[in-house]
Length: 537
Image (tube, rainbow, N blue to C red; front, side, top):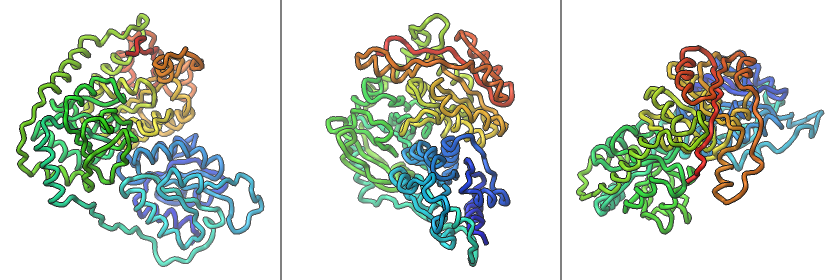
């Protein structure tokens, strides 16, 4: 059997239904093997989009997504998406082609050390040097990608290895039952004691807690004891943010209202959190004492300094804690007062964004989006200053309903993540919000979305500038410089791709345009005149 056939049959055995990517000369044997398999090839217009989509498959399912590219530029185009998945704990397998390794007529043409390039940004990277090794390599790739912490595995398949004939006994997946370690009674009661000693504990939820069983048991613990909680941007959707215990989201490093609430606490219970998600300054050496509860040990430095680490299955930890009788005398009155003050402020100042007449601002945008999406619908964000406003003020009621990246925080991921969400959840409304700068980075994959007949609304925040950088310039006392650019007519551009385009110049027209777009099938682009409040404080 041809080695590439063995590879694809192993992927089938592990339940792979789609492979995302761009073919090249060096992976044509792999492409032919996919053609004759049950796996669907999702052809994208750029390898970066393919990796973003495969990574989000891993986010939604817990099973590794698979992306494919050729050697050289195909592999280098994957790098941003791979780093995105690796830093966000998303299980992913990427497969790249390569020139023959035994004998090549083209020698160094297009050759770079792809495996060496991938090693720093993956959990494991290797070259297939024998077709007979493919079954064990694929098995270990799935195992490594899914194990704690989840991440990326890279496999390079040279074309002479892919085409070789291999004798093999059988092809099957090895699904071992792996039980994650749980904490022992000594640690459980130490944790109970620390909670009982605290006067006003508070819970921080990070991205590592985004799993069904954790959500269930953590919610039960929070509602039993009415402990206030807040989240990182990437942990927003773990616990229903409609309950009274929700305080808000730590979208800024310091100086936000949530930091006032944290300052009233004497203990932070950090659940599934990693400083990659952007730490709050109050968790460092001189900050509020914190306890790290996660699947793996903390990376301790001056910005994240837990005094106790509880390592093991997070869901099991909170199941055991909920079963215990915790004797406490907690007082959350000051924390709740801060939350109520901020909530009232938002309600009173929703329209006061000091913008030019008729221009949409981030507060009203967030408010309209929340009112027009159901509790299980999905909002996917690209990266920009608007992400801070939306993550702070957009409550999530169910898991994976706000998709964003605050680990690598790369632009260009918004549209591919929305595409992946719609493929995984075809019956949910999916809206992508992207800046004009982020959209054009992967603009060509609008064609992919149209070809796949996806039903997505893309809201383009059009202000002709890199807003986050402008904000930082102003904050640093610098002149605004080097940030402005021109944009195409996005509405007309949508039509050229076979999508439907709208232009909204007045904020009063946005909501009815959004509702009209929801009634039209396919890809809809809403080009929205947008800006940020002029006073950054």
